[in-house]
Length: 412
Image 1 (cartoon, rainbow, N blue to C red):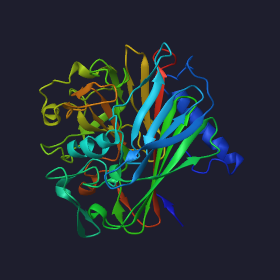
Image 2 (cartoon, rainbow, N blue to C red):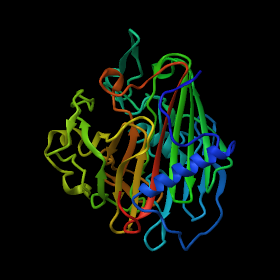
Image 3 (cartoon, rainbow, N blue to C red):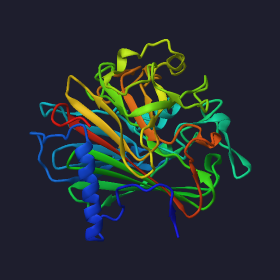
């Protein structure tokens, strides 16, 4: 009998029973009550939920790539590719009902295949097998030392040279979703790929509901003991893609502690309090307030690039991890997750080399990534929550991105 690695509150089969529908409804209602703000309907669109797809281009390998669009009843839309599961656009209205795309990306497939890979940018991509870093590309597992591909010397970053961000995922529409539209993405990673043991079967659901919440559910099973850490690497700017720095966005993080890193961006193994550090966002304030601090952790990452330990982790419950607000547009984003950590990254490596669909060059601090995941390098730190997955178990975690408008609801 399959034993759940970590339960998630959104059920895969949404139509089989009244009980299942009731559970899904209670989960969605509960998250809605906790969200910072529920989005009001946009005056520009009141179309029914829609699922569409079209050709986006051809990879250098000759593989065809499709672009998919999820649109809810209020006109919010999410676009993603079969290549890497990459989210290329999330369009939501501001306080005046004017829609804008709020994630960074490339205007062409070539940018995702070539430029993103060359610069380790990962715009909008699904990350696996192991999100974040593995020190020196090695980790112990059941008495053996596993060696993975080093692509960010001296470490393995985001799954290696040919991670899930560079794969063609199979996509199908999910049916029977109440007040929502969604897609299921599946991918099988063969035994030994990038050095990771076991054949890993992966399923990711993208679900956009009518409260303007994008939920991402990750599941995986294996036929041999292995490690798994899956996430999405979208870069958010709530003022709009190409709008410039997010330093004036406000950020609140539901975390009392974080995992400090060494000069190779690997956790030291210590669990440190955020008190009296630039990483204390327990009360909301400008991202830019301490962005140029001379604190050693800030100098290592050239800004924020750290894992915060989300309060209240139990592996099952979606807890509020972080809330971001743009004071100009009024847009808010609250992130809920069953994962134990959230890596927050202020796009420190963007240097003006690449431009997005707006035609504006991307520079440092032009976006914030909110990567819910297990801690970096967990297999090398037994005290961290385990990322080991064994046959008969299921990796199962959900993260929800709730978009809203500041001042339209009570802050949790």
